[in-house]
Image (cartoon, rainbow, N blue to C red; front, side, top):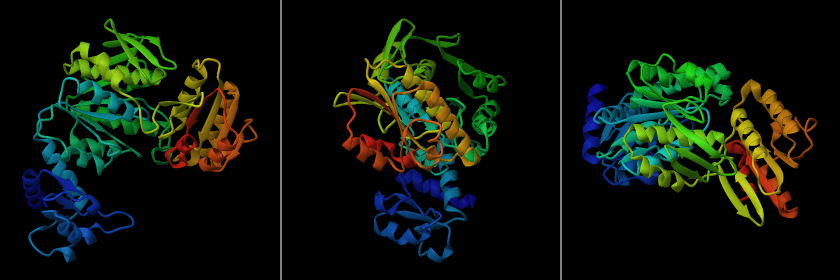
Length: 428
């Protein structure tokens, strides 16, 4: 298959564009006929050509018609190998970001800070898996000075596979938490899966940026030959001092005040990571405060929405036990000018055998923190009704209807849940 890969790569150098969806064909692009659980991508080859694709990559000989149809053993492997070849044409810093929580926020902060001084290419949206990473690489402009690639992993081995594709020479693990336990098995599995980035950097003499506030990450990275540390109010190579963490963040870095609409120590650590990486690659410190301040969270990640006298803390793009605990503790510590504190939580998905245990643990935390009102959604949380004084709804739509009929007044509201619960419907 090596000859076909080289040929596809040469075609890509001529075209500079790839597509995997016939609904978004770019003229003269290369269409990779990827096959999923419920569809055969090869059946879309003709449609891709009709829509303007110059070549289509297929893995079923029955669909080959002429020289525009390039036959390979596996279209996904071909996509990954072409992306890997393109990556090797760049001699620039390529940073990989993985971790249980905060990957996307850190990536977006890095985009804001690095763009103040460099031509930077970052993962768009959630293109962070075995398909998204090669697509991200193949979309990288030739004049890119630094790349930031987000890595999404659901099980041990995923991060290693991604490293083989995009070969990061720099990396960061944001933290280790209880994510995707259905795939990783347990917290040790999460740590093992994320540490695959450190293993790659060790083998490639790459550089890791490590949160010195996190004892686990400091231990995991102890074997690395090259590491730089960052921290909030602790000894590190790059130190940010905290002036305020809630309800918004104020930091000081090298006598430069840093303001952000983000909140909580966990987000302060994400900001510190972005600052450390930016300083290391040469961004002048004078450009950093404005760049950090320019980042406004979106897509239901750490958003603060004020409406009808209420403050909504919308952090429901996703959730796992670690991020939910951090969000709850941070919310209950914050000062919202005398508003009553209301918590709206949706089920945490992909917990596997830990589902009941972890939802029970969150119920116990709610009993400890004692928010003024609690609303919970989902079948997993329903089992916790006997442990917490709350109102239960099967879906977020039902909760929204209830809130419409029973409006909140002078409240601060935390909204958190896994993506599938669609908790943002409560405020959208």
